[in-house]
Length: 172
Length: 221
Image 1 (spheres, rainbow over the protein chains, first blue to last red):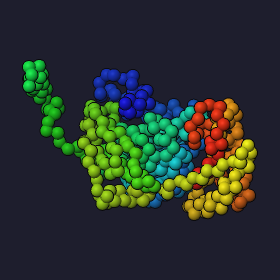
Image 2: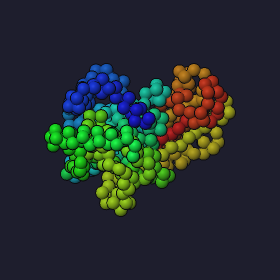
Image 3: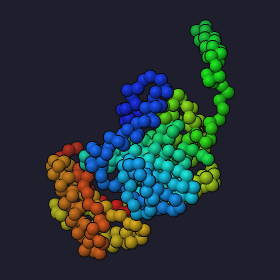
Image 4: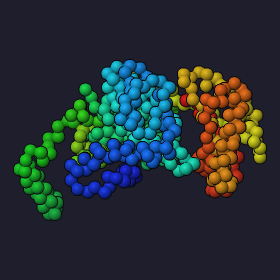
């Protein structure tokens, strides 16, 4: 079952088997919790950029460790970064494994996990489309470890087998 | 219809009636369309190079009250997932509609990275003549790009240990960086890395001599 593999990835939500309400609370809190944990330990391990902004226009921002910084073409992005666009903003990024992403206006994505170290057996890509619209073109992580790739929105979870897609998480 | 199925159907009807009586939040039908403000739309696109597409499995988020997943397996197939709703059945979006809704989004995608693979002469750390001849093409590809990044990745076959192959891959990649530096690229803008024997071009068992796996890949993005 393809889904089995995708759901297995996020071990933290397997423990909770009570009401959907509690589950929703845990899900809402988990990404922030994970980021806090990542700062002392795994932040150093993945200090190398996940990729780079290639195209930027209008009001565009990187949200890193709670700080919102204006984004521009050429800037590196890291695991755990969020990217945000204003009503006139657009962004295009290329990641280290050849994954390509773009964001439309009034959109936000979060790079929850990016690991591309095949020699160490570390491969993973988890991205949340928090709001607005994003395009995703899969790279080598999806080729080498398709079960480790997951795209999430407030309503849905998407597993991919080497492909390109558009996800619209919300519409004004 | 046999007896057991009839009983089952009756049971289901009674259960549905009971559920409906419990309050409005349990009413299942008729299913209203998902709220477009909060619903997720997923559209599979054709891969730009081949025109083929992969596939995507779309499910309600783990916190959703809904179950069931839908598979998008051909270009322009789409589904909508509302909050606490299962994905709608697959529809196909027209090319015009995709262009209208997502044209500017898709034009913000950076160009696809370009790859070159260089091979070594038999039992040697020297590139083959064919690989050497690719250097001008590599330089041209770098110059054509805005904000180019160059990554040189060394790969080995499965002869020897994975640790020594990591080192060997790195040595080959560093050698190629020197070569590109001599040809006019700024070596400090080139990243060198190794995947050792972890990413084989030709799948082999461990400890297998395979010249096609001894290679250096250059990614320009």
